[in-house]
Image 1 (cartoon, one colour):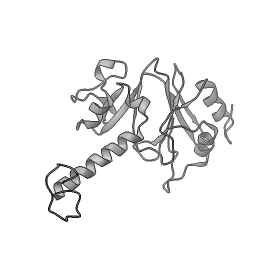
Image 2: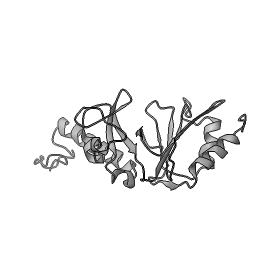
Image 3: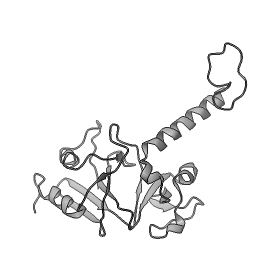
Image 4: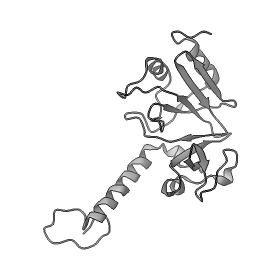
Length: 203
């Protein structure tokens, strides 16, 4: 029996699918399931999802979404399965207790981290991480509270941290990173302290 459509297969056939179309469809379904499994369950459980196009959040009906209007957001499955736009994003909403640390230009061409980024990643709790759409950015996801976002540029350090009224475009999960969010109490103080103690930084 075909693993995708359920059609009868020839006796003694070693193939798992009945046609090339079913093989490709089965592959796409498997990849979709793998990508879903890579997204933390606590994020998938919330209706905070949007599509995106040209770096702007988009509703699943193709109209523009707003990071402050929950009526323009969708559940994870609806956003994931929508064909509009260029991918999915997650809206950071007040009261949810989700914070994202965004390290810009942190990943080298060989896949390793820039030294300043490695120092920050190693100093923070181990948590769910994914690479930004550009391939050189890194998003670290935490449980925490942050009312006012911050953008920090000091020397080679390029860091942003947000906890509300922003959306984050989801990239590929960093291999080996957990599928859960770590706790990060007193987010603002922790980030300020990390940046201030980086080599070459000034308080």
